[in-house]
Amino acid sequence: MKYSDGFTRLWPSVFTGISMVISVVLLAYTLKVLPVGSAYTVWTGIGAVGTVILGIILFKEPYDFLRMFFIFLIIIGIVGLRVIK
Image 1 (tube, rainbow, N blue to C red):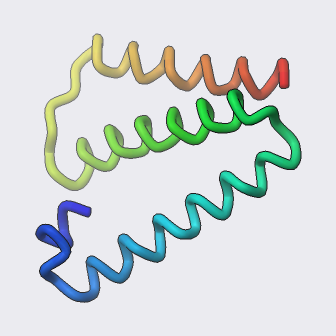
Image 2 (image 1 turned 180 degrees about the horizontal axis):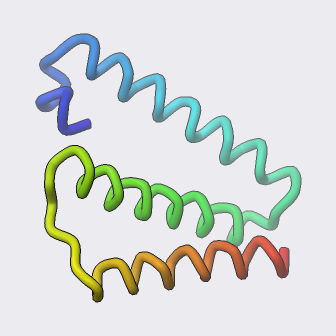
């Protein structure tokens, strides 16, 4: 979304919109398998982890041991929710 510059740039805005729609469609698909609370938590966690990782890669945001440790904990929580369904 950052590349869209507040939705003032066409192609980054289109890509952002398409990505959002795909994300919600995939959430709806997972609701067939997981309870809504678990599905939403996993969806949110994946979004948070993905955002942090892309921020580090694309925008040179800082990363250190504690940041990576807490991202790891989010991933463990996502996996745990998926395992227990």
